[in-house]
Amino acid sequence: MAASKPVCKLVSHVIVDLDGTLLNTDSVANQILKSFLAKLGKKWDSKSAHRIVGRTPLEAAAAVVEDYQLPYSKEEFLSMITPLFADQWCNIRPLAGANRLIKHLRSNGVPMALASNSPKSNIEAKISCHNGWKESFSAIVGGDEVEDGKPSPNIFLEAAKRMNTEPSSCLVIEDSVAGVTAGNAAEMEVIAVPSIPKQVDKLSSASEVVNSLLDLQPEKWGLPQFEDCTLPIEPWYIGGPVIKGFGRGSKVLGIPTANLSAESFSDILSEHTSGVYFGWAALFTRGIYKMVMNIGWNPYFANTEKTIEPWLLHEFDEDFYGEELRLAIIGYIKPEANFPSLESLIARIHEDGRIAEKALDLPLYAAYRDSPYLTNPLPESNS
Image 1 (cartoon, helix red, strand yellow):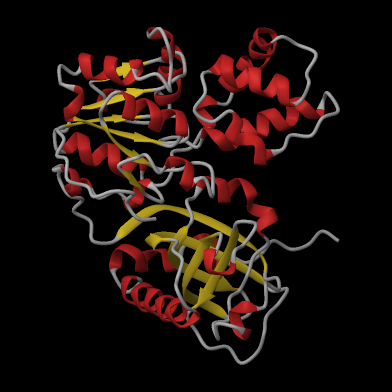
Image 2 (spheres, helix red, strand yellow):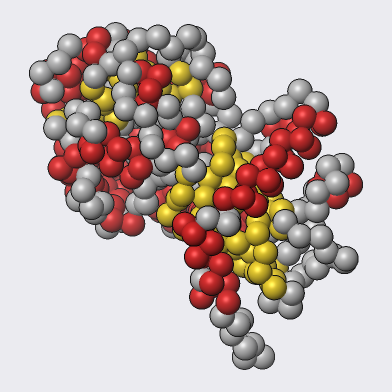
């Protein structure tokens, strides 16, 4: 994603949204609403999630009541659903790059505020589950502390006031249309990090649109630059039988990918931004190999669903469909992108492979080759 307009404004303070920007609230919301609606004989449609993103709790409740024709008022529905969310607050995971950003700005003395449409008590409960977050923010503003929530600018103006700075000195980081609208109305610079796939056009009024927090470049705004030249991430581990993909890996690209079922990892996919990652792959009948992988929509091929497509950096003499594949994903290379031609796409994939090959020789990443998840044998079947 490219910036929608030239970036030239320097800032000194940062205001960050919480749900969908720092925390993967959408995944938990989908699970809770799916379960709640199922008891009423209704099926949650995750594609309609954009209706509640960036809204105040009462506005979101009203949207669900309307969309699913529930036999409750918006207030009744909110009172029933709120305890279900409260039970899950400590299970909401940070989005990719959230911890890195908070630690970086705090260690460099950049004043930060948290501004969310959620009630302040809910905000504080959520961030209390994440070490070092609460003390990193010099101001926390909830939607219940201002007259109108986003898209009104009130929350952001109040955050600037509590940080004793002018709105023009602030950079807002947001995931929703309502948040971007509010930031613009407050006359602040705004970076949009879309939480809803393929909603980029609706965020074009932002000063810049980036794929994920991993792709922020603070130096563009006069803030300290990240020092890491590679992007280590909190490791995550997935595995399953290798399935046939779309046929494009070998047939179109000449790059055989060892695909895993995206359906089996829908929750994990929602936690991790689309982009190119790397790590280690284990095939128990063959060995452990370096691996680079794409997670996302593959815009060149116009995917309709998010996929996981690992490329094991080794030449195999035969296919291994059905074999158990385990992956340790430990680093991030770049955001997903579109390409003007098949040739440019292939060249970029091979470049990503070279980057992964080199990075995985570094001690920081090489140590994960011996991860127990990769080296322990599969449990024996009880059948």
